[in-house]
View 1 (tube, rainbow, N blue to C red):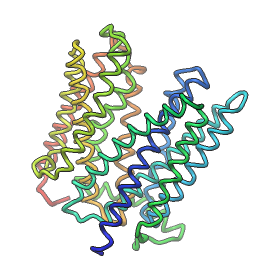
View 2 (cartoon, one colour; view 1 turned 30 degrees about the horizontal axis):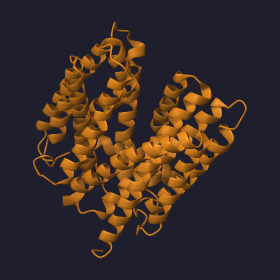
View 3 (tube, one colour; view 1 turned 45 degrees about the horizontal axis):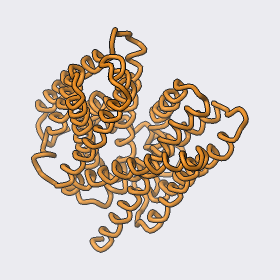
View 4 (spheres, rainbow, N blue to C red; view 1 turned 180 degrees about the vertical axis):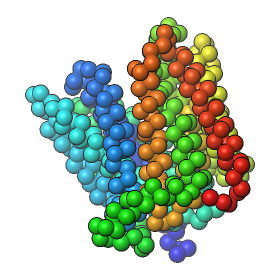
Length: 400
C-alpha cells in the first residue's frame, strides 16, 4: 500500500492539472460562445442557472452511484461523455443556421451532471488513498493546482477562440477531457464493498444519503455553513460589474482589476493551507473564515477607491477558498469510503441552492443601488456563521 500511494497521488495531481484546464476552457466556451451565437446576455445567465439546477436535481443519484462503483471508471466515463458533448456543441450546435437553445440547455445540464460525477468520484479517490492526518493539506494542494490550471484553461481557450473559431474552443476543451483519461487509467482503485447492486439496494442507498446528515450534527452544520458563506462568489459574478459601473462610475478597466483579485486570493488561500500549518486548519477555523467572508463582503460595499476594492475582493476570494478547503477537508475526514459520494454531494447541493437564492436576490428584491446587496449578504453571513459556530461550540468534540 505504501509503495502505491505516491504513484496514485502523482497521477491524481496530473489529472487535476488537466481537469482544471478542461473546466476553465469549458467555462470560457460556454459563456463567450453562447453570447456571440445568441447575441443575448440573458442566455448566458440562464446557462449557469441550468447548471446549478442540474446539480440540485441529480445530486442524490450521483452521490449514490459514486458510493457504489469504482471511482476510477466513473471519472473515465464522465469525461468521455463530456468530450462527446463538447464535440457536438462545437460541430453541430454552432454550425447550425439557427442554433437550438433547448439542445444547448440539455447539453449544459448533461455536462454539469457529468462534471459533478467527476468531482465527487475524484474526492472519493483522495479520501481512500490519503491518510486522515494529511487530508487537509492534500486537499489544499489539489485545490491550488485546480485554481491555477483553471486560470490557464481560460487563457488558452480565449486564445484558441480568438485565433481560430468558437467551435475550435469547444474541441480544445473536449481534447483536454480526453487527455485527462490517460493518467486515470493507471490509478489503482477498488469499488466500495458495503453497498449492494440490486435495485432495492440502490433505492435504500439513495434514501440513506439523507440519513447520513440526519445522524451527523457536524455534517449538518458544515452543510449550513457552506450554504451561507461559499456562494458569495456567485453573487459577485452576478453583480460586481453593476457595482463598479453604476454605483462607482468606473469603467471596464477597473472591473478587470477588481475581478482578477478574486482568483489571486484563492491561490493564496490554497498555498497557505497546503503548508500544513496546524493553526490555520484547527478546530472551528471554518467558522472564523466564514465570519471573515462576511466582513470582507460587507466592507466591499462601503469602498470607493480602486486599490481598496481590489484588496477587499481579493480578501473575499481568499477567505471563501480558505473556508471551502477546510470544509472539504472536514467532509473527507468525517466520511467513509462508502459514504463520501452522498456526503460530498449533499454539501454541493446546499451550496447550489443557496447560490441560486443569492443570484436571484437582485431580481426578487429591487434596491436603489448594487452596494446594499453586498452589505446585506455580508451581514447575514456574519450572523449565521456566528450562530452556527455557537451551536457547534455547544456540542462536545468527537460526538455527533
